[in-house]
Structure formats: structure tokens, C-alpha cells
Image (tube, rainbow, N blue to C red; front, side, top):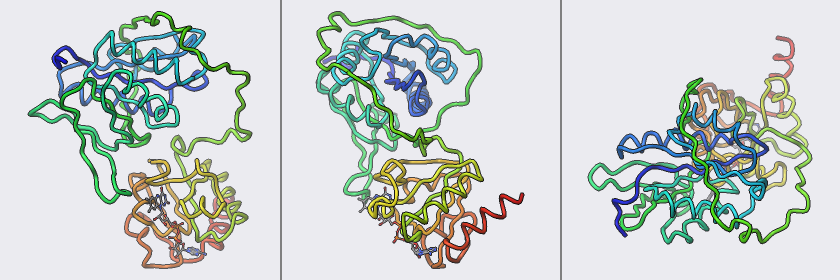
Length: 332
Ligand code: FAD
């Protein structure tokens, strides 16, 4: 393999219901930084059906080129055709790096793409940089339950592939009116790669806001004491226009859904305001929220580690303080 034949940083664009997901913009932001160090450009690879309208925001968030793979067969995400299209795109265009969001879709398709193009994949990265000497990507991810950070390189194969945690990288400010070239490509024999028939797409009942998109999070832990008490958090979130999230202890207790969990094995969030109620502040929880703009902690133990990262701390019983806060805000 001649590594010099491979140029450019590619981002796999994830779109759901006709909207580009935030993680795709975050990856374009990071890819721009890497591309500047590598002296190359960022290509967004957009798969789907009737996705023309998505090219504009991709260019405005920093893509230098878009490869659009638009086909009715790609309307709904399916592992096989998506992996095939990405692998064929890589074989044709030979990028030196490919970034994929570590979402449910990204975790599904990422390894399949890398296996097809005979390269490695560093999963669930939280850091990416270019080694100035070798030009290799340094892909960093937590290992051994978050006790060490492992930096992984892929020196002998191209492309270098990583899935990257949503919420960790920053998207660039939107540059209204920015445009970039759009190239169309549909790999041959795509119809030979459809091995599943979609009968129906069933959406989850509550169209809750993803905690990674929320500007305000009211988060509950074991200190909320029961599932019923999570209603107190919902009431506060409603008054603030926010969303409820939680610690792993709350998920383990069956008080909250797994997709609400913040932390190392949950989601990384960076809201404007994070209110931690009855959460101790274990390292694995902090890993998912310590970059929030403003952190408020309510905990009855004044020595709880959450107070070390909090901008404002209230020592007391969350079951009493949360309703008082809600009432006070309602009066505002
Ligand atoms: P606790 O640690 O039990 O804390 C409860 C807090 O509530 C205490 O500080 C207590 O003083 C306070 N409290 C009790 N009653 C009240 C009250 N009435 N009013 C106010 N305060 C009160 N955790 C995560 O959150 N996210 C993760 O992604 C995650 N990943 C993990 C991955 C690994 C590999 C491991 C080993 C652990 C992980 N954990 C994760 C678990 C983590 O270590 C902690 O166990 C967990 O975060 C604790 O949740 P908690 O703060 O809600 O509960």
C-alpha cells in the first residue's frame, strides 16, 4: 500500500428524518483542524434519498466538498448497503482518514466499513490529533474502564478510521452562504447489497429531546431516591425549557432510561446549564458533563466530589430544594 496515494479527511454524515445529526457537524469541525495540519481538505459523505437540502448546512458548517450518494435504496439506514457505499467511496477516492460518529448507527457501520477496506478502526475516540513528525493520526480513547487513556496509531494502513463520541468535538460557527462542490456518486450494483426488507419504521412513543442537543439538563442520581421523584426533575426541566438526564445509578435502579444517562458509558453532554441533583460526581459521571458551561449541584453531603466541578452548590435535600426552585422559577 502506498500511503501517499491517500489524501483528505472524510466524514460520514449521519442524517435522521431529513436532518443532519449534530455529531456530523462536530466531526466536520474536528476534521477541519486535522485537515489544516495535514495540508488537505474535508469531504462530507452524505448518504440517503432526496438529501439535496442537506448540502447547504454541511457546506456552511465547514465541508470543503460533499460526495452525495442519493438513492431510494438508501432512504432508511441499513447496515449492508450503507457499509457497501462507504467502502466503495473509500476505494474510489482514497481518503487518508475517515471519521464516523460513535452513535448506534456509527458503531454498527464503522467496523464493517473498516473490515471491507482492510484497515483498522479506533472505536469511541475522545481525542484526535496529527503527529507532526509522522503525519499519522493519534486517536485517543478511554481504556480499562476509563482508568487510562490509550493513544492509538494506524501507521501502515489507510485510511485511518475512528468512531468519535458525540458531544466531545466542537462544531464550527455556521457561515451563512458558504458553499462547496457537490459530487454525485452511486456505486454500481447497489441493489445487490439489500439483504433486509423494511416493513415498518416504528418511532418511540415520546419524541423526547436527545440530552446531547439540550441546552439545559436537570440530572438526577441515586439521591433522588425513587422513580416517582424523577417527576420533580421533569417539573423543574419544564419550567426551564430543559430536559431530564441522569447518572448510571438511576438507570441501574430502573428509574430512568439508558438514553438519558450521562457519563463514560452514557452520553457526553455540554449544555449551557447542568443541574446535578443527588449525584455524587463519580469520575465516570464527570467525564460526560464537566465541560458544561454552568454546573449547579444539589447534594446533602457537602464533601461530594460533584461540588469540585460545580459553579454553584446547594448543600441540602434535593427532594425539598428541587420543588422550591420550580416554584420560585414559576413565580418569575
Ligand atoms: P451515588 O454515587 O450513590 O451518589 C448519590 C449522591 O446523592 C450522594 O452524593 C449522596 O450524598 C446524595 N444524596 C442522597 N440523598 C440525597 C438527597 N435526598 N438530596 C440530595 N443529595 C442526596 N456513572 C454514570 O453516572 N455514568 C456513566 O456513564 C458511568 N459509567 C461507568 C463506567 C464504569 C466502567 C464504571 C466502573 C462505573 C460507571 N459509572 C457511571 C458509575 C459511577 O462510578 C457511579 O457509581 C455513579 O455515577 C453513581 O451515581 P450517583 O451519583 O447517582 O449515585
